[in-house]
Length: 254
Ligand SMILES: NC(=O)C1=CN([C@@H]2O[C@H](COP(=O)(O)OP(=O)(O)OC[C@H]3O[C@@H](n4cnc5c(N)ncnc54)[C@H](O)[C@@H]3O)[C@@H](O)[C@H]2O)C=CC1
Ligand SMILES: O=C([O-])CC(=O)C(=O)O
Image (cartoon, rainbow, N blue to C red; front, top):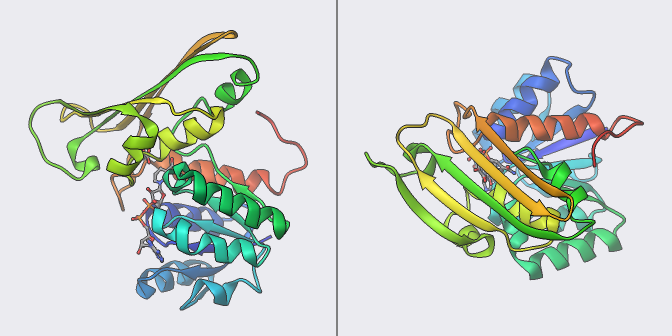
């Protein structure tokens, strides 16, 4: 499988390192970033090609990994799907816009392409998807991050947001992909709390789900990427694992 990268930041860096080390059975052929130097840096790690426009890679690739921004999901992912190429979307928050999601799903269906959304920086999506076959009573996410991960500075712990995922995504677009993935997995606008906490040095996500299956709680204490502390290493690992899964004949987990 030949893969192209759209957005050459923290997540793309980790993916490229794994491919370079022979730990993912895909060929990373093409790199696009609006900052050409970033694309060239990653391309040089795997003997790939940096392109000036995402369209330039489409005739050559089977799949594009979007690891850029919600704006890239709106503007460039439709172009990729229109060319019949599969996409891995990391900027999941963008998919909370129902009109955009519908348009992308229709474009994918029309062009026989697939949109993959990895579990990202949390654990528990497998259980949530299974639970949603029955009746779900409540889904709550509490995200606790060092202020720096939220792009602010403060000395005291503070609840920045309490409300629904659809609203959180508008106020914290680069920090709430996890809430979006949970909402999409169970098709409901989940409860979200975002806390800036100077006492933690990890991105911590607590998910509590109640339903007719019983109850589960997951806590993920994520190490942050050195390139971008807003982003957890686990998010990149989930994309790497998904790329491996796509070349396997047995799929484990929902
Ligand atoms: N699904 C999840 O659980 C997670 C998702 N994310 C999301 O994944 C995305 C990537 O994260 P990182 O690698 O940490 O970001 P980053 O900020 O380190 O890198 C993003 C790169 O994409 C480029 N870029 C952004 N918009 C672009 C556009 N429209 N066209 C071309 N290039 C563009 C930037 O120049 C930058 O080099 C972000 O949207 C982030 O919010 C991050 C963490 C967890
Ligand atoms: O922990 C992370 O990597 C980022 C995060 O909270 C999100 O995007 O929802």
